[in-house]
Length: 149
Image 1 (tube, rainbow, N blue to C red):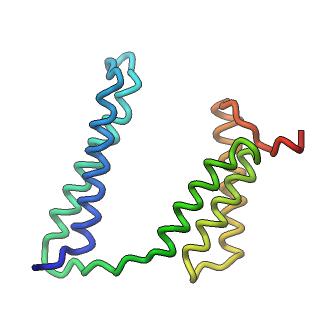
Image 2: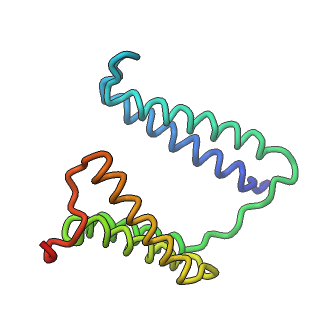
């Protein structure tokens, strides 16, 4: 049985995720061009993701596209833990600390990434998240932990 290249596998993953977005967004009102409904954006993004996934998979069928690497459990688990840290920490710890903690945990997934690069990325993303989501978009999120108030 031939082994599928990593491009084919990635393309199929993207196409599947895009199709999933399109299917889930069918439960929402699509709206019209002048008045978008909540289902329009996920439908468009899912469609674009599915088409790009199909294109990547088709190009990956050509010879010499590379074989997939073996599955690495440590990075997979650390990225999932980082998502859980953010989801569970955003309310009690605030946006700033949650972003920093989740980036630090996700940074441990790459053994070659330095702590300085991870810390710099965490601080820049935390500041950027606070500026974009709280200041510019006006979302009702706490920036700082509840015990600082």
